[in-house]
Image (tube, rainbow over all chains, first blue to last red; front, side, top):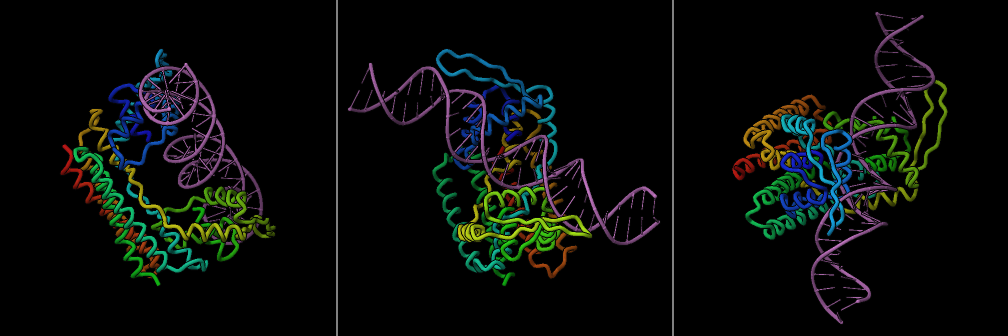
Length: 168
Length: 168
DNA sequence: GCGGTTATATATACCCCCTATCCATGAGGG
DNA sequence: CCCTCATGGATAGGGGGTATATATAACCGC
């Protein structure tokens, strides 16, 4: 979130509402809609940290807005973030917690959990296929996002198989 | 986190420190060490919500402790959580943000980003292999966690290839 | 033209997770 | 005797997420 806003502001000054629209347009429907509240909170924090600088702009025909531009410190922070590799995926997995801990409490058994979760994953997979078909073919960014989600989901499905083999 | 603690308390009453140790022992080194602070915060929230009930226990030879046990409402909440499928993976990917947004700011190019990230992922992959070898072979839970992380990582690597093909 | 929806624009409150750090006690060891 | 480690707990601060409140203006139907 912070990175995304800073990167967008590195291109050109903008205000919160514009940034939300830019994110939606760039990443398409595949990307979970960025919450507008989070954007404003993040912007004010970035300003507090001196990475961006805002200025109120009065508008006659529309509500007033606050336009931010990136600062020198902001550009440095952005370069620093980009320079270091992004951390890998979290090993923490909520479903796995369930799978390991729930049977001991007697609320369910592992096989039922796995089958339910598999159905859920397959449902999501179908949803992603529909999303890919509905999304603009030429928005390669959105298509790639969906493809990435599908790869991860397939990994989850494969893992589910392994869990079923290994446990019980 | 909430789920894990509630599930552990469904088996038997325990205090925070014990729960931390139980998590570490169950999930092994592969699991990012649960932060002890988070455990206490979560416990107090669970108690506020009436899902668990704590009681102070004085100890002569050790610091006093606070032992929690699950309530009836807690058992119901646990059953409810277990009954509904766990949400799938997040489509939000920080690296992807970098890949899409950073080149426009002139701080780097896509190929450099991808190559750096691939090296990073391969490094993590090697680390996971070492972890799997170091971890107790008989701890199937820990081995499965590592295997899951490797499957996700492989999906990330595959995705990286796709991004390289599609972008630029 | 009047009332409802939609678009523009921002702010705040609340929940959750994570890390770091502080506090306290007692046991073991150099 | 002091230092470290294990036991036990608490809190502050940062960040991410959702929901909701607050304005204004445009559009649209009846």
